[in-house]
Structure formats: structure tokens, C-alpha cells
Image 1 (tube, rainbow, N blue to C red):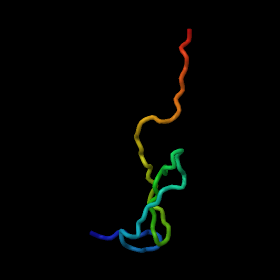
Image 2: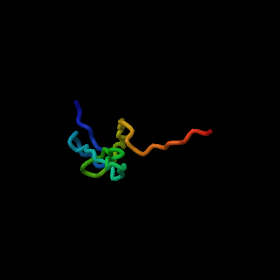
Image 3: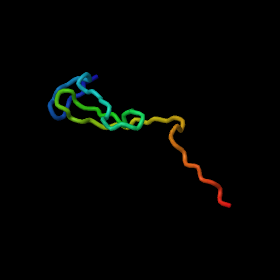
Image 4: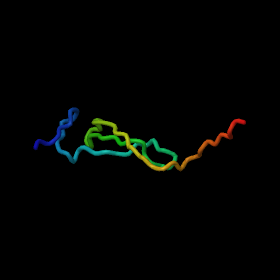
Length: 67
């Protein structure tokens, strides 16, 4: 299997592709997405959304019945 090669700087190897959490955060402090980039030059390979599914724990709107 061939090692990936950065199109900008030419460095090779899977260990040169790293990912970081975004600086943008939700109310509970979790990152919105991850960024995959070259560790040597910073070339961005892609941005990947973090899908999070869970119960509804936020505020809810309650509307009184019309009468």
C-alpha cells in the first residue's frame, strides 16, 4: 500500500495527516467539527462534522392551549 503524499509540501506518510477539534464549540463545550490537515505544512484535507445524537436536554417552549 502506498503512503499518502501531501500535494503542497510533498511529505509522505499517514502519520503526517492529523486531525484537530474546531475552536467553535457548542453550549456544552463540545467541538462542532474536526479538521484533517498535513502536520508539516498545514494543507487542509477536509473538514468533518461531528454528528451527535442524544436526548433533548435544552429549554423547551410550552404554549398554553387556545381557548
